[in-house]
Every structure is written in C-alpha cells, then in structure tokens.
Amino acid sequence: MTLSTTTLLALLKQQKYRFFSGVPCSNFADLFQQVSLDNDITSVPAASEGSALSFAVGAALAGRRSVVALQNSGLGNIINPLTSLVQINCIPTLLLISVRGHTDEPEDEPQHRVMGANTHALLDQLAIPWSEFDGTPQGFMACLVKAEEAFQRSVSFAVLVRKGQLSAGLGVVVNDEQQVSAYPLSVGCALEIISEALRPSDLVVSTTGFISRELFRLSDRPGNFYMQGSLGHCSAVAAGVALARPSHRVVALDGDGAVLMHMGVLSTIGYASPRNFLHIVLDNEGYVSTGGQESTSVTSSLEAVAAACRYRAVRRCVTSAELNDAVARSLSTEGPHFLLCKVNQSHSRSLPRVTSRHTPEENKQAFQIALNQPPTFHLQAAPVAAVR
Image (cartoon, rainbow, N blue to C red; front, side, top):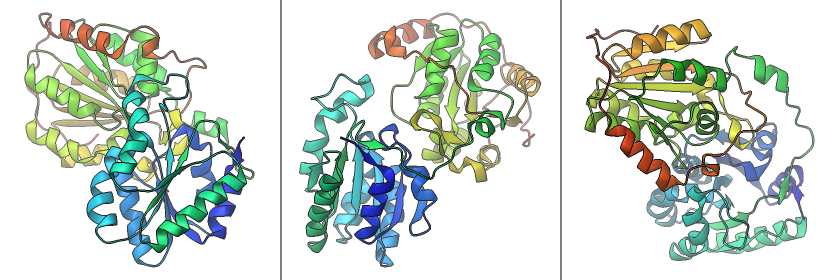
C-alpha cells in the first residue's frame, strides 16, 4: 500500500500542522518539493537534523504545530536537542522517520545496518512513543491520532515510514533539462579531471552518496576511502589523515549538502591548516541521491566561508578549464586548498555501489596499505590567497 505525498500533507494540515523542516531521504518521494510549494505550511530545508528540530521547536514556541522529517540514520544528530531541549521544556514535535535497514526487509547498504536494527530500541530508550505506518490514509490518520494523545502529555511522537510507502503527489513539475544544463560539468566529468591529476600515492576520501559511487565507477583505486553514510564528516576524516600523514597529499571529495550539514569543520581545518590537504566540493545545489531536493547552497557562497576560515587558497570553478587549472595548482602548492566546483545534476544511468566489489572493511584495509606507500610529491610554498 502507498500513500501519495499530496494526501499526507492534506492529513497533516487537517490536524493543524503548519510548520515543516527536515533533511531529505529517498523514502519520502517528493515530500520536500510538495511542502515547499504549499502556501499553508512554512517549510525550512535544514542542513542537519538537529537544526531541523530546533527550527520546529522555535515554531512550536510561537504556536505552530511542527513536523520534522528525517532518515533514521539522522536520529544520532537530534538526540541532544531532543533530550535537552524538546523533552526538558516539554515542547512536542511530530517526527516523520524514514527507516532504512529494517531487520525484516531485504538487506540494505551496510551504513544502515546498525541504526536499522536499533531504531525501535533507541526511541523506546528515549521514551518517545512511535508507530509503524502501514501505507494507507487510514493508517496515517491513526498515527496522527496517537500523536495527538502524546501531544496532550507534551510528548513528541514518531511515525516510522518505510521504502515504497509514499508515492509522488500531484502538482509538482520538475524541469529535468534545466537542472541538468544549469552548469556545464557533471559530477562524473569533474571526477575524471580530478582523477587524471592524481598521483598513485595520493589519498582520496569521498563523501557518501553519488560522489563516492561516481568515483568508484570511474577510478576505483586502493587509495580511495569511500565514506558509507556519515554525511558531513568526509572533510574531517580526510583532514585527520592529512594531519597524521603530512608526507602524503590528501584530497577530500565533498558535496554541498555534506558541507552544509557540518560547516563548522571548515573553521577547524583552517585552524589546523594541513599543508598537504585539498578540499574539493562538487556543488550541484541539491540532494540528488535522495530525489533532487534543493539545498541551501543556492543562496550561499561556500567558497567565501572557506576563505573566511583561513584556507590558504580558495577557488571557484565552473568550466573544465578552470577545474583543470585549479586542481593542478592545488596539488603542487601548500594548502589547505578549497575548490568549489559548480556541477549539474546529471549522473550515469547505472551507478554501481561500492559494496558490489568491496566491503567497508576491505576498503579500509586497502586504503591503509596505500597510505603506507612512499609519497611521490613535493609542495611549493604559496601565500594565502583570496577567493578567485
């Protein structure tokens, strides 16, 4: 059974919910697009689940019933505000939780295994009542009735949504051609340019989602560490490697959604200043792997943030020529470097998963072997540069 997102929003509005925030998941179909077009609901596309919950708390304080949508992997990001803000101040919020890695479903990707097996127990441990959604309008209404009962006790309530239970609603028109052609480079084209500039001893840490899958498709090598899950932590992992092994060049392949989720790490990297570090952000202004929902990088200059955080050199690239030049300069001079490359949202029709060839542990072991190979580079000193 499936419920359209149009019907879901109608039922929420019927129960007087008027504020929506969250972080996208593919299980939510076009929910984020639908709610952004609904004039009766104020919606905020949050960078992280904790921020989404905090926006909702603010709206609730101002008298608006609030909904927060998130994947169960994001439960870890809301535990602090959930316990020390929501529960302590008795401000109830409705949580729509997309469940990945459920134990009675076919095996999901490894990053969902632990949270999938522990979602129920975690909610129980936090004393948050929950209900499994059955995919029907009647079932969702029954969940909202239970949520109402919890709200009367000033307690939050969670509705657990599984893959395939929501279908696309009516009225959303997406211009795929406009999304694809907004910038000339695709992620795959950008990664080809970057991969050709790397030396065998260079180390790469790539963020979760389509960026890692494109890199795996184009240039699978022992020196690649593919992040499985952990959105927003790629740059910190890569910088940690760079600081621990200053003899190797280390490249972080990041995305706009990931950088936005934990933007504070840019300040830490600028402070730690690993000279052998190159941070490349492939910015497609959306969460393409979960359905193409818009990210707030549309109205943000991430390269300006990096410059303010004291990266040694910062570049913005749009064309292949600009990216070629920027990568060559960054790999030959002292960092930390930050390259923002604007890309379109087109991808290969069939993107292989890293787990089709490597388990996470095998990937880790191969990366550690590559890390112990002798380096083959020399960095030239470079002055701190402004954004270009």
